[in-house]
Amino acid sequence: MYATDYPRTFKPGFLWGGASAASQIEGAWNIDGKKLSGAECIKGAKPGETHSTLDEATRASISEAIKSDSDKEYPKRHGNDFYHRYPEDIKLLSEMGFKAFRISIAWSRIFPNGDELTPNEAGLAFYDRVFDEMHKYGIEPVVTLSHYEMPVGLTIKYNGWASREAIADFTRYTETVFKRYKGKVKYWMTFNEINTGAQGFHATGALEDGLKTADEKLQLRYQALHHQFVASALATKQLHEIIPGAKMGCMLARTQTYPATCNPDDVIMAQKIDQLNLFFTDVQVRGEYPEYMNRYFAEHHIVIKMLAGDQKLLKKYPVDYLSFSYYMSSATTAEERHDATAEATGNQHAVRNKYLEQTPWGWQIDPQGLRVALNTLWDRYRVPLFVVENGMGTYDKVAEDGKIHDQYRIDYLRAHIEQMKEAVEDGVDLMGYLTWAPIDLVSFSTSQMSKRYGFVYVDLDDNGNGTMRRMPKDSFYWYQHVIATNGEALESKEQN
Image 1 (cartoon, helix red, strand yellow):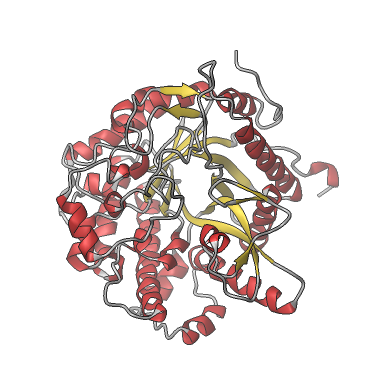
Image 2 (cartoon, rainbow, N blue to C red):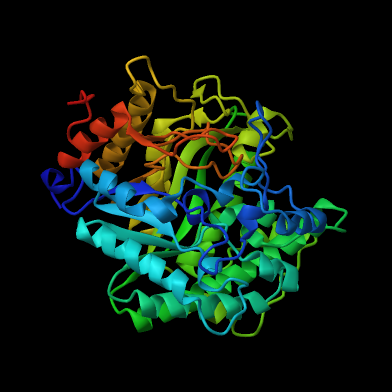
């Protein structure tokens, strides 16, 4: 291959677009047969707070949530009302020129308690309408099967993914949606940011009341994750049989990890943290548990219970592509820390990187880290890569002229797209780029509306007050121009 032959830009058919999740946009939490998911049982952060509320879940808090009918106390129950406004929202995406839109199917809209033997037709019909509307504008659906949305009924019944019984319920659900949307969806992924299951309830659906030590909690979490690995392999098998030619992806929350210094202790710790992140894609892409986890499991007294055929199943049915989110990088030290930087990154060895700016929520902005992440993943796995979340959660303000001038968002996204282009020139096989999230939604980590990501402003505050009116921001017109030129024109585009 000659040097002049290598790709210098994004390939034809590159999937430009955006991403969202059912529990953060749909609302309609208790209509048309739907019941609660775990996400809709988490309260919002208090006014002025920016900390994560992801895993503040106990048996008592879940019981309280089930009894409550408040969508103000539990903001994911109202989302941005996509359930009723999807025609307007999808039309806005089409105006930007979207090639793809990632959504999740709310499992509890299809099987309200999670364990029913027959699906809820009203839920299935809703997604028929959504996919039909997307295809009307030539937008390719990219569907996440489980985006932190396990039916809370399964948490109550047998503590979610901690029980192997969840596999059968999940694969009944996946078989149902594969058959239903056979002619409408060809890009799928199993579990959103599956690695965050190592942090607890939001991704495992498993409560940890009564577990006293960190190792006891890790035992439950990694056992639950093993059940998800098996379910993912079975779903991949189903997909290939039901929809030949369809593609299944895994989804990783990628936080690029650097050693804080050249001290070998920091280098070793950064390597360990990186391995804990890549463990999940090693299982789902390579189809096997990596050797380095043997030591980690032994040091934390973790014993994974497997059935005889589990490892063969994982090996036989790996995913077709690797998708990931990228928001920040992490500088890692050998010293364990418990400050804001450690909380923001999810890395208890993280320290503030003095070379980087950060968002109001403490997320360090590192566009070059995306290039590093892309090259790292491509070198390791050699499967197509797909950036399915990237964006900056920050405060937006409606100016005196009635518009939202979000040049800071344009600058953030432009810098990341420039680094993606560098990675493509490096030789990375990149399928597409989906920003999080094209229309303002309820933040997953804090359940706040004020942590805004979108190209479209939604008139709604953290207390659930507002008209839900949609207003394009300056970034709307900029991204429209980026897509129209397949990423070649990244300069600011003034509003018409």
